[in-house]
Image 1 (cartoon, rainbow, N blue to C red):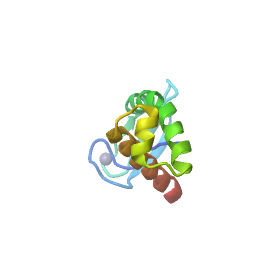
Image 2 (cartoon, protein in one colour):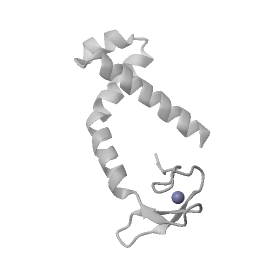
Image 3 (spheres, protein in one colour):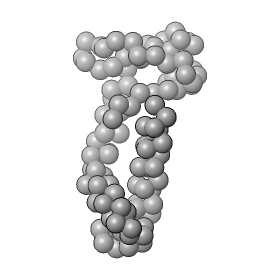
Image 4 (cartoon, rainbow, N blue to C red):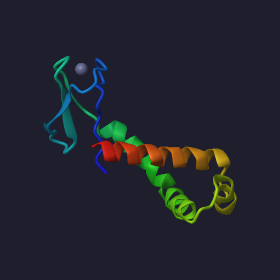
Length: 103
Ligand SMILES: [Zn+2]
């Protein structure tokens, strides 16, 4: 999955951000047509990826169980995670799906 920011980090303008080549470090650079600034987001997204990696196993299992028709409460009991986490991950995955289908 390829994430890219649609909101400028500086002026918060939406839909003004374009990819702007790669930095020497290999990170994707972005350019905002509104405020004419360029920036990299590697660091921000690295944090996000590390966080997601920790939850990737749980997410995969939730997907399987949910496909089997298990309720969120059943899933939380089976995986030994709190219902709040199950709810959040399912919402998160639904959001990812809708973002992917819009792109
Ligand atoms: Zn901007």
